[in-house]
Amino acid sequence: MTSISPNKILIVKNRAMGDSVMGLSTVSYIKSLFPDSVIYYAIPAWVAPLFENIETDADEIIPLKLKGFSDWWHLRKQILEIAPDIIYEMHLSGRTEKFFSLYKKLYKTPYYFHNHHLKSGGEVFDQGVIKALIQRDLDGAWSFLGDGGKKPSYLNFSPKMKMEAHSKDQVILGIVATRETKKWPLSYYAKLCHKIFLDSPSTKILIPLSNSEEDLKAEIELKKEGLPKTVEFLRSSLNELPKNLNGSKLYIGNDTGLKHIAVALGIKTCTFFGPEPPNEWHPYDESEHPYFYIPNLECRTREAHYCGLHHCESMICLNQILPEEVIQSLQENLK
Image 1 (cartoon, one colour):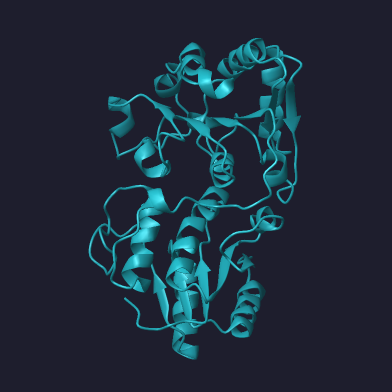
Image 2 (cartoon, one colour):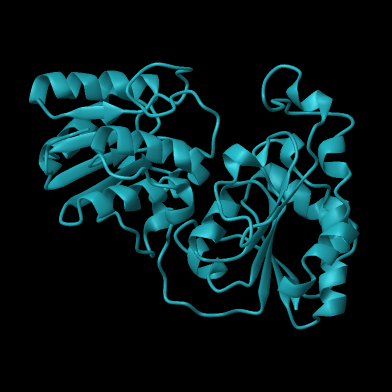
């Protein structure tokens, strides 16, 4: 645990969008340890626009573009201008470790990192133990930067994206995901839309999509199923996305970055888990954020503690979660 009282802290999480959002929990924890420090949060450049119109416990977002030598050189100049007292990387990658280790050697700036892939050993509490992702991030921050007090719990540090609240009679459906095996069937989403419309004809059903070919295909397929008039497909820039989602009464959908944004905006969620167990990728209070998951499937754990397939013929992990079951479970939230 550090004995430094830093004025400036650079926190790095060079991961995907959902990981960057979940990283806000650790940003908040470190801010609670050093409330007078200026916090810089470095995340991938393509994700950075998401944070343009919202407030977080980070004082400034640093976009990371790390493709060529000129990008790394620019990052060096940025860090020298910031002059942080501590650099903390909450989910190590090989390239960034080499860069920041060299930076530490040249400029004597303390650099701490958490290698999530290390099975045991090291300085991090419970290193290698499979647990909620936010908890693992918090464990690393507590191990290196904590004051020796009580270990933080992910239940006390949910990610927060702060905006002025505007309640909307709107439900968000998250139909996309990073791979096919994480997607609840589109035909089930169509049935869900009709049931929502039947029970609450004034409620807008918002389906955010990107401009990718895959998302366009999903929109076409879903429209073929037949949809009520209250369904709206949203193609939004990242910097406008939080405003479009803010105030919604519920998110229903796959485990994806969109879900984590909804949580950070204070929106209740209901998530479908198939190949991956929720204990790691759903680090939230289940009373506010319930989920559907079929446990003890032999096919899921043949090679690891989760299924890493991108394509699967049976898809029993998600096909057996029926729309009728979902509707019944969410009746109160949909009123």
